[in-house]
Image (cartoon, rainbow, N blue to C red; front, side, top):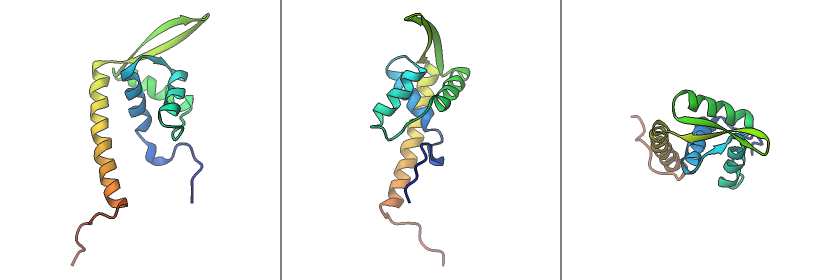
Length: 118
């Protein structure tokens, strides 16, 4: 059965990783990130502002992001960029993600499993 949910349970941690990765390239404001995630993932992942903004705020609070306000066309936008701590966090979650995806791929591809209990 195919799920129509946009954020299945296994997506925990993915928004943080995507946000850090995209902001490592350049600063962006929240809605711009929402669009960038959709484009970068070929529309496979669509995160709403209700997911992105809490992650941005948590990452800023933890020191992984910094923000600055910028007046654009009469509106104030908050732009986010990655700090040194954010780059370390991105490296850590990327290593974890690679380890987990390799392990899941092994199972899905039918790699040999642990021996059966005797």
